[in-house]
Image 1 (tube, rainbow, N blue to C red):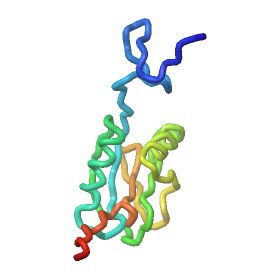
Image 2 (image 1 turned 90 degrees about the vertical axis):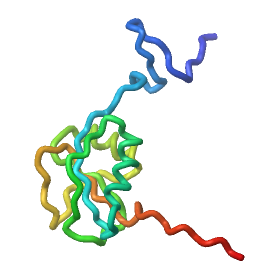
Image 3 (image 1 turned 180 degrees about the vertical axis):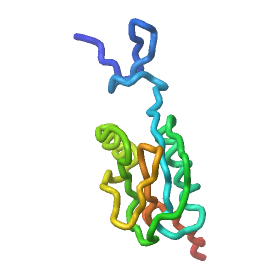
Amino acid sequence: VAPLNIGPTATESGEARLPDGQVAGEQTEATFVLRNGAGVTGLTKTYEAELLAKVPGAKITDRENAGKSDYQKTILILIDGDRSKGEELAKTLGIELVELPEGESKPTGVEFLVIVGKDKVPSPTAAPTP
């Protein structure tokens, strides 16, 4: 019976490998523009922290408002890069990879655009019931 490795294992070069084959501590480098698509002040700043926690090698180059403020769901748009990387990032972030929506301008100098929708608006803290 062969051993079953469920944690990091060492490669010949001494790098720790995770069960999915990625090198432990390896960062996915990607550049993003974040746009507020819900019209809620501070939403892109809040989402930036979530994105950086899930994609440690991410670089946010700009935060701005989307062309409209009624996006219900947060979406990822491939601007200039590898579609398979976009699909992997969408999966990691738990959002959908879509085409650039009509009415939105295409940012330059980045791989991805994230339009943060109403699904990422923090819910107000509910007051306890007496």
